[in-house]
Amino acid sequence: MKKFIQGYKKFLIRGNLMDLAVGIMVGTAFTGIVKSFVADILTPIVGLFLGKAKVSEWAYSIQYGEAKEQILTIPYGSFLQASIDFFILAFVVYSLVQVMNSLKEKAEDPQDNSVPTPKDIELLSEIRDLLKKENEKA
Image (cartoon, rainbow, N blue to C red; front, side):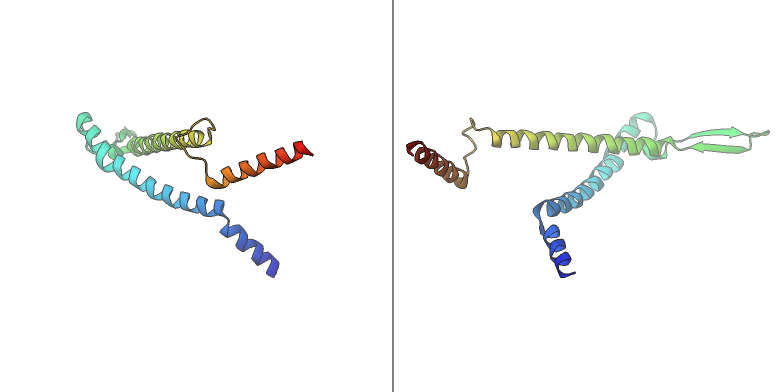
């Protein structure tokens, strides 16, 4: 049991899991910001041009029955609001991933001198070169 707990501790403390936890928390907070931006700023502006201030309140009503006394309401505005939230969030996340990938590629490019090689990598390269020379002599 003690071995299991120690292994579980190592798993929890490992960097990737902590990065994932931080990413989930930041992502959740960012989702709230995007939803607020779309609901409180963007859709009222769009609604001004289309006649209703809040897109989430848009609905289509159908009267039915013999005397048309019953009304069926289809609130398509909520779906439209959620779709706008999704597309803006997806665009922002895609943009961030693109920026991170380009930075990662630039950092990994051996020909690029704008990003300095870490000191430990330089030392390991020197050790490798010295070992190659020693093996060639022998």
